[in-house]
Length: 414
Image: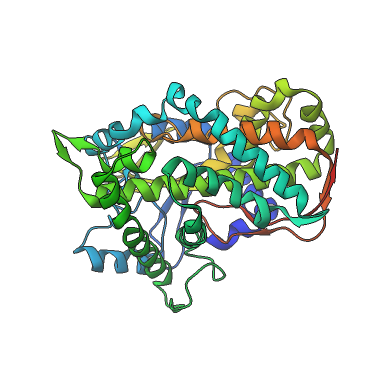
């Protein structure tokens, strides 16, 4: 539950998840300052909960785990609601269904495919830039955080000069529990995470306001225009809904892909034979993408709240009980992925993983994420002869979305 745990997944969270799966897969955790939380650690339980949104709802509790003080701070800003942003993770059907439908056509495979050459050209430029930096680089800071951000900004139609602003905002958004990512003006009070979250959302809203005005006056074919000019029953959606979509796409579309990419490179460092396999066999690239998403699991959790009394795997729970869906645990579940579920192996067809979630809350941008990673691997991996650590990897302190924020490496070109 605690953000500090994910700074050392190998020695803290993954062993704990394994124990829970084997001994108490729906254990109730009670930590000071937090609500009691049901820890969902098995793949099948997570899958079943995700597919029943009418029973396991996003609201009225926070769909993102936070401490009670931070939740109370958010409610103080909204008149009692935990909903601080008009984005689908803070919605339930039918509103959730209506909002997702607005831009679903844009994320369909046939539409995403239109951007393949544009993304490939960007990937080639970024790979050339990576090798121009010299033999030793911080892969995460110098490349892994930048490539996905530039893809998202290109799809949005945002100007390149705004890159530092968007980078800063995305890191603050997911780094609300990381002292190194928080704003200087945020004091380390018990509700600091809530204050940092609210400040990041306010800055995003301020940044995107003029872009909405501009795209409504002069629409183009970019994603900003699609969102800004979306309508429900013939009426333009409110600006808060626009901002919610912008924030969701720019943050989740950036950080989840960055975390997967950085985690994948560390996996290749630790498993050089796997790098050699995919480098020599392009047919393995798509399977490599899926294995990297499963193995890294950049989304650590989402929360659900029981809307009524319910039974899960033979255990009884009450209306109002909160469930923490632990995606990294589900993606290492031995009952789903076999006794070698903790191994990184691109040659094993794993089947469906939990990296994008399931049901109506499944990641809307998963086709874009797959496209970004596939093209990047196709352009980068054949050019890497060896890659090894040149320092100590460093993780973001977060229990929500994140991964490596520093990965010093030594690259030898092929």
